[in-house]
Length: 405
Image (tube, rainbow, N blue to C red; front, side, top):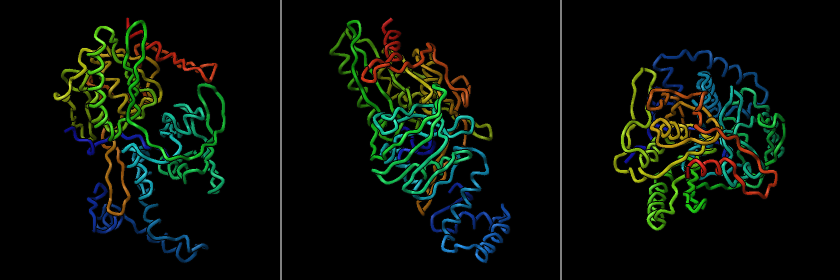
């Protein structure tokens, strides 16, 4: 079975949203162990702690455990990598729920664009999606009147953004956004909901006498390991019934923020017969390769078009980039997000966790697309229908045209 926990191509999500010196359950705190090994001089931290204990007015706010978490967060933040984060228990639980595909919140996947907090993708059929939040929108401010929060997002960490946007189901959070497409600033007020997002959805579309399998792959979550093989079998069953009326597959990766790296290999392995799907290069220059899973290969001869946009990130870009490089699919849509690093998660005994960037991933030809993205073969900008009730999707229509050529 493809290993799915060791490394993840992680996009932290606001969907309500060991490693440090050999931390192990039952041993001393992470900071204590670092001090004991003499790798950091923490004497100044203890001096500051003592001064706070003497001088700080609101001493009831001095909670030792929270101060320890704050110190660790600050240490990790000093690395200046937005994807390497320490998560206190509550935020770590939310992150794990997100990767499992079940969580509570407003349905926004977070990332950064030039160090500014940004929407990587609105999850379908969620408050953010219904409010018109778009991939690429910059998040300038977070306001929650009930919790007395009015926070500018300059310099904000993903962890802090998660904490601010999450909240009780039924309560509201207001986001001030800047749309680069519309060149305008606007606000949306979103009511938090319980959200369960399937990893994929299959819909059949008829065009020019052919039936096309429109596969909407929402994210590479843990659920995908079970849902993808079932869906592939369903396509093959339907394909046998349709005969020459079968037109092929449109694999829709638009606004797919990523997830497990190995899940992208699983999907690619049904379309590619052999070879390297993705490479992973660590800081020491060591390169690990992920080959086609030879137990799959169930859609090798199906015509294939892949839909991408600016919300297609991480594992989505691995899949799209590999299929393009193998000349297995035509890519239609817009340039992808551009996230080419790999994070490894580690959970600690107290429920907290660390997500640390351990490597960069490379396309089969050795190219890393971090901050660059994958360019489509056929560029098509999404056109918002003038009539909100219209179901016209110009990118999907173009994908089907390319598929049936």
